[in-house]
Image 1 (tube, rainbow, N blue to C red):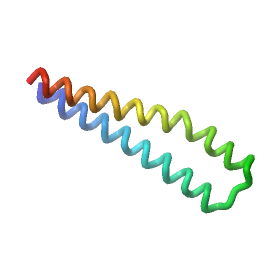
Image 2: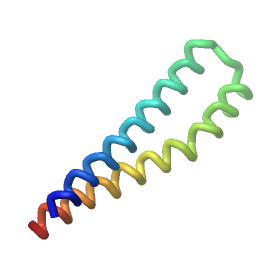
Image 3: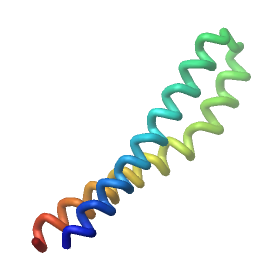
Image 4: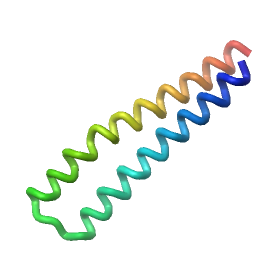
Length: 71
C-alpha cells in the first residue's frame, strides 16, 4: 500500500500545481488592468481548470488516506 500513498501524494501535488497556476493566471489578469468583460473571459477560462485541479488534489489526498488506512 506504500505505492498508493506515493501515487496519491504525486496526484495531490499535481492538483496543487494546477491551483497555483490558476492563482497566477488570475493575478496576472488583475495586474494587467483588464476591463470587466476581458476579466470575465479570463475567469471563465480558468474556472474549469481550477475545479479540475481541486478535484485532483482531493482524489490524491483520499488515495493517501486510503493507503495509510490499508497499511
